[in-house]
Image 1 (cartoon, rainbow, N blue to C red):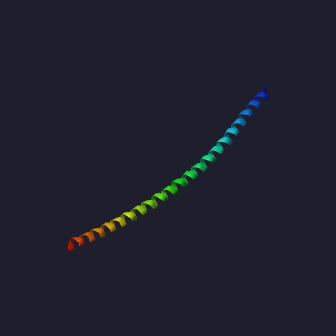
Image 2 (cartoon, rainbow, N blue to C red):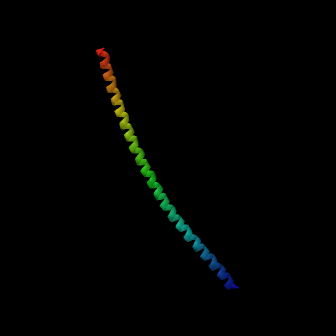
Image 3 (spheres, rainbow, N blue to C red):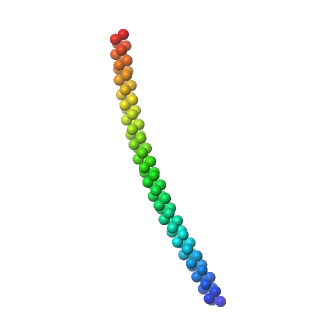
Length: 80
């Protein structure tokens, strides 16, 4: 009878080891996914920052062109 109890205990220990091994594999997989997602977030943040700078530069260029156009239109009105 004690041999049966020992076998049951051994079986439960093996199941626990198998479960722990699977969970460790899942943890590693999730860590890899997390690292990949973190890299994606960083890349998107860098891209957004770059686009924000480019947008600001284009707004400044547009403003400069508008000012030049206003100046030219003002000179044309003065000539007429």
